[in-house]
Image 1 (tube, protein in one colour):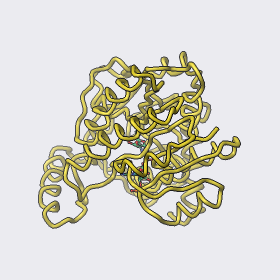
Image 2 (spheres, helix red, strand yellow; image 1 turned 120 degrees about the vertical axis):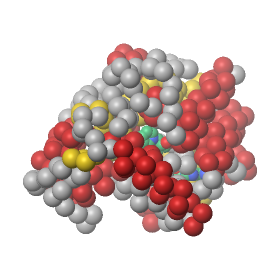
Image 3 (cartoon, protein in one colour; image 1 turned 180 degrees about the vertical axis):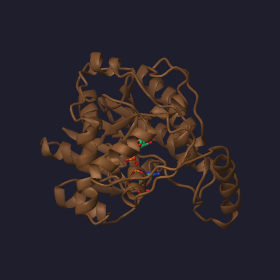
Image 4 (cartoon, helix red, strand yellow; image 1 turned 60 degrees about the horizontal axis):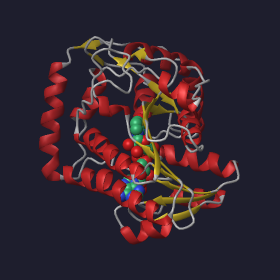
Length: 327
Ligand SMILES: NC(=O)c1ccc[n+]([C@@H]2O[C@H](COP(=O)([O-])OP(=O)(O)OC[C@H]3O[C@@H](n4cnc5c(N)ncnc54)[C@H](OP(=O)(O)O)[C@@H]3O)[C@@H](O)[C@H]2O)c1
């Protein structure tokens, strides 16, 4: 099949593009910036188009002859942008891709949302019916695109929504890298009790879920939480990361509230100067937002079955960080 992956050079996009090419599909990857990763994707055999999901002409060009769209592109890690940028990319960009896909006769549309639409889960583990409780602008805009996807589904573009948990694995340059780096340094400051629940998702499992969702008749018009078998307390995650790295880690505890205040203050102070704040509310939420999910619906409808344990996933990730010189 000819398949479009938006955000194809991102952490998840790259893993998906690789698997699709290995399966013999023809892949178009749409991404925002030219760089080393775009060269790598071209070397694998993907067609890479540089442009924004908000650009109607570019998107129209990308969907020609495409059967399936995996829509992953998102404003996600951008800090030095106004909130309206998140809406423009995550909601209007999604609408743009949907409209172009519908007009070009695309068969299936898979939208990559986030488990973050549920915010803090009050009664963990939460399932897809847990209240929508987005905690920040990113999560809110990821959620606001979901009804747009369903509107197009009703108009005839068969769509599936995936809500991934915290993605990690070889290739992750950001979030889990920060955890690994701090653990490798021997001390991991824990703000709060360390008992907050966190649900990792090994990258290969998420790629499995995308492939299952692209199959005819699976999950049409539905939303699915996608996560690993196991969720953990964050202090346990830190200890198991240390085990995967084969190091000892000290975990001194500190109160959380000064960090919450510092996160807000840093964000406010840094914004006018266009400086990336060292801490900001979304990062602080890691210490306090319970995220633990029930993945029964994806198992039942999609046949989703995560096979790699957390310890094995962490071990593979540690090996990758070391091999690539991150640690
Ligand atoms: N990481 C997680 O734990 C997590 C959890 C739940 C859901 N998600 C969702 O999963 C998807 C992939 O996440 P990821 O962690 O792989 O993020 P990522 O590495 O930041 O990938 C996002 C990609 O989208 C591209 N992009 C951003 N704005 C664009 C635009 N206007 N037009 C075209 N491309 C654009 C980025 O390109 P540039 O790098 O060139 O800007 C990047 O390659 C996202 O939809 C995210 O919301 C992630």
